[in-house]
Image (cartoon, rainbow, N blue to C red):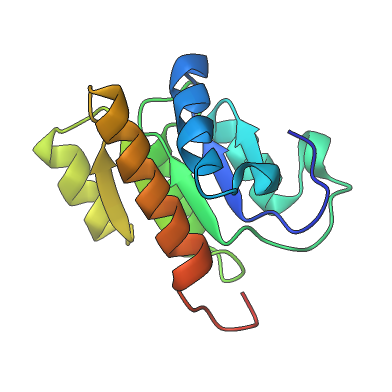
Amino acid sequence: MAELGAVEILLAEDSEADAEMTMRALRKNNLTNQVVWVKDGAEALDYLKRGGQYAGRGPTLPKLVLLDIKMPKVDGIEVLRVIRSDDQLRSIPVVMLTSSAEERDIVESYELGVNSYLVKPVEFERFVDEVSRAGCYWTVMNQVPYSC
């Protein structure tokens, strides 16, 4: 999706089907016009650090990163590690939105500072409801400092 104004959500998801379901869920709260979808962890880092194809984008950072764990090139755990170790990025809320319910992924995500960990429900309606609530909470209800 094209960046028209301030990006509210950076969606890092390699599965087109899961990305479409996520967009559909966000659409329930009119959040899809402020979403940038990237298909792997390397592209997510390029977006956040204004590298590669995103070198010319504006300075505004997303209000939320929705991050899958199992992605090509750079996995979600490594993206989270980079976000939390970067002074300019560390305050961005990160929600793991993943199929992995593995305890080691959950533990490592929280050790690295993830704000929330959501396992994608198999049932479509539950998936839509959970993503819709998470997107609304983190981009509309959650308060962040102006410097973010």
